[in-house]
Image 1 (cartoon, rainbow, N blue to C red):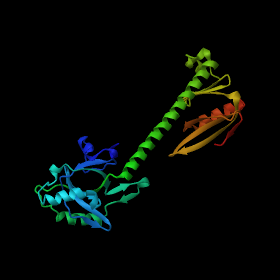
Image 2: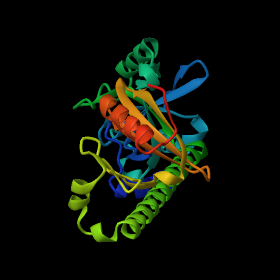
Image 3: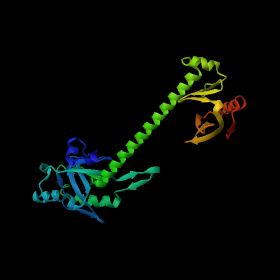
Length: 290
């Protein structure tokens, strides 16, 4: 986890700030610093020179006091701190971030940018030849405990989501195995000859991959489902719309309160026909809400 690594370790592993947006901690090697802070309200900023140019660092002076002390002792040499091996682990805040529903948050206002430019023009870096690139669209801050806690939370959340997905996948596999076992028990003669079952089915609609044989409904689409219609207490047919797409669902409820749901994308007439067959030929109690 980058936020828990030392700045030098990050730097040596090439996790280096290149004046681009990044959501994780990165490192800079401090080549020089302008000791004169830029104050905006109660916030303090310093110009820090690193391998890729000059960036704006928001920090309290006591947090970089050692760097400031070294700079004072080395006067106005160019790249005065290059040999001092000062590394900083930083977080990057871009000028603007986009949230949900396109909402934008401005972190560097035009007024702030104007003040940064005005100070850069009178800074020691502006006079250097060649003049370093000025990174005016990001603000750096030191990686602190808050950032580390945030990273830990995001990793924990990712692990939880992964475990949930894994659990759902395990349940899905178990259910598939159970349905395949049921099929083999109910239709042993068709265990390896599914195509013959399709030909001899009492009802078969290949467009929705549903067939009925001996009062057993089989759905062989993305999921393999075996339903004994004699155990179904009642069923519902209804429509839902997701992102402008219509889905027609057949939801069957067993006498033991378990349920099975089959959904079909843009298959209104096919689902109606299946519902009519189950109701009229298999005497399943169906409530059609279409």
